[in-house]
Image (cartoon, rainbow, N blue to C red; front, side):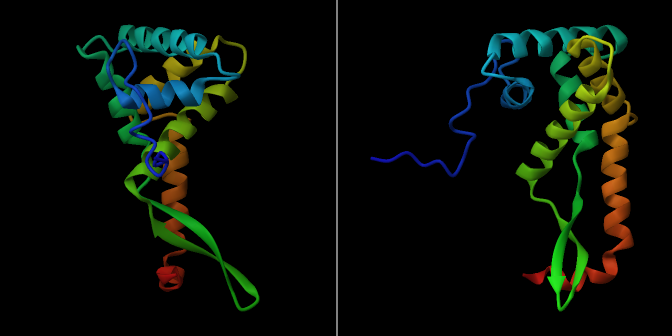
Length: 159
């Protein structure tokens, strides 16, 4: 019987430390060249560093959960060609895509910082996202502003 590949959630296993599928997704996005143990070490070290910067947080899983929630976009713009013109059409973002965009933005913005170890860069980005500041949250706000500016074209979103 063929496997059903429509849902990746069933194919993922929770990470060993936090027993969280979200942590597994972050580790998978962080991983390069199949080096899972290296990605896990970076992620766990980043969470430890972030926990030292946020002493009032008891549960370390709360750090990455709240950081992802603060970066999660509600709307995005998609290009749509109508006649001879391209319009930036605002659309609601499905829950799974919200999560994957948030993870991608956190990791990408961490990688953009230069001159530090990846664990340190990731911990800084997680702390900033936890506090509602930082490059990833600014990215989300920029996407929301673009959607707001183009809401006149929302009637093209029906397709």
